[in-house]
Length: 100
Image (cartoon, rainbow, N blue to C red; front, top):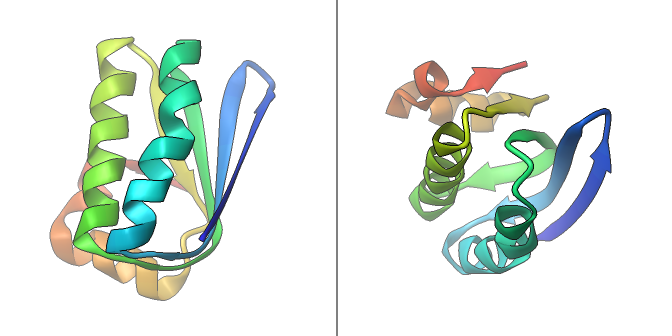
């Protein structure tokens, strides 16, 4: 898994590439530490290159959502692949997140 973070248009964009499995979920949490510290409440998760998400990955997304909500921010997920989107729909996460 690869994570890249960029600030633009008043929001922080986080691009996730590869498989977000149990091992990668821990790596993602470490990569997000500067995002939590920066305090920008508006985040975009670019998921076009995310091939898979496990329950551990969903947990990281939920933690990030709680952080954003506590700051009255917006978290949107964009360009989910069909298989990943199906996981979001089956788990009810599609109702909790703004999917674009």
